[in-house]
Image (cartoon, rainbow, N blue to C red):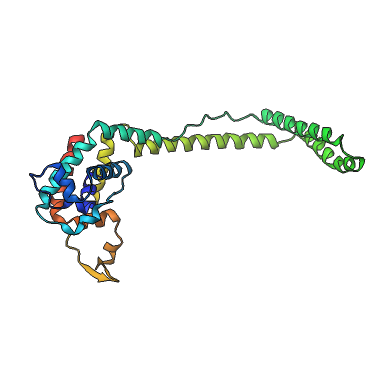
Length: 268
């Protein structure tokens, strides 16, 4: 998201001249270095644009924006190559890693039969024990329940009962599906959060380049309900990232695009 940070942060494209130092940069952006750096970090880590604090300077754009873009991109590149960023990335990567739950082997039909007989027998024994403390009338009322448990146990012990084979098949299928789900979650995590931070940077740069080439910087705007919208409805339906790149303008992206392409080549 390096370039999207620059294009999305309208504030980042302001009057920072090539000879200003970093203190001047943050002053002119109207945000602290801590806020700016935090926005850069969050944009790279999440894949979304963070531009909190940029509104205070959005209307003060002046000066050489191309030079401002170059300087800011250089800062962004240095920051995401720092040990501090790599440490933060790895911490987040581990935090969102899918929890690996140990899988129990599916039970056989005979094991399921045994487990259900044992569970039902325990329930029957508990009921009989409680029944002994009841009044004769209550004991009479409990007889159907006791009989029902006894009939279930007899049914479970019947070798012709096919229920347990079906239950065993279901457990096997569920076990396979759970294993596949866990594997898919791990694969997605590895794709979204590659072990090598350079792979993450590549994904962000590729996202910017993929969007940038589709932006029509000559697109016209019109006033509607007190706000500016695109004349073409198809542009109004574009993503927030697309619109951010458009708002940054062709001058900024004429610098940002080759910077991103050169950076991407370094990472390959």
